[in-house]
Image (cartoon, rainbow, N blue to C red; front, top):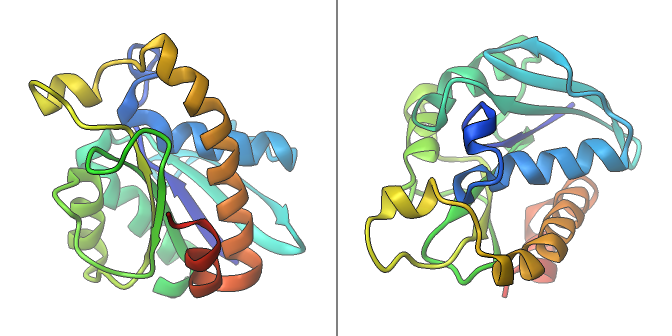
Length: 184
């Protein structure tokens, strides 16, 4: 069993914001593999199914970004997962819009959602797929809670599909092969 978590904030107010790109990637995976995300458990919306014959749990925490760790910890404990079974998809302001970077472990890089997960599960030894949302010119909070501009959405649509491809690749081939294929 593997757990793929998309980070974001619940509610229509945040639906298409930069901070919710993790939700959008998980939604794409759910759509591709007919996994219903209507169940509520683990402080989030989740669904279970199979991707490339691998049992998978897809999770979108409803705890708001800065408290995502309680949702991940709850699901991880329930399914008795190892850290290597976890992939978290999150936005990253240090990467150009639509650029992807997978890491097998590491710090939060200043991302509050990743930071809370690291604190709650007590480890940074899990994979994270960072999805570039571009760099803010002003307030970072206003920027990540803002929506993509129309010209950015042209890039975002295909990048979401590519991020979902990277998640599928990770399930089958692991982090190293996925980094070699999708980072850059």
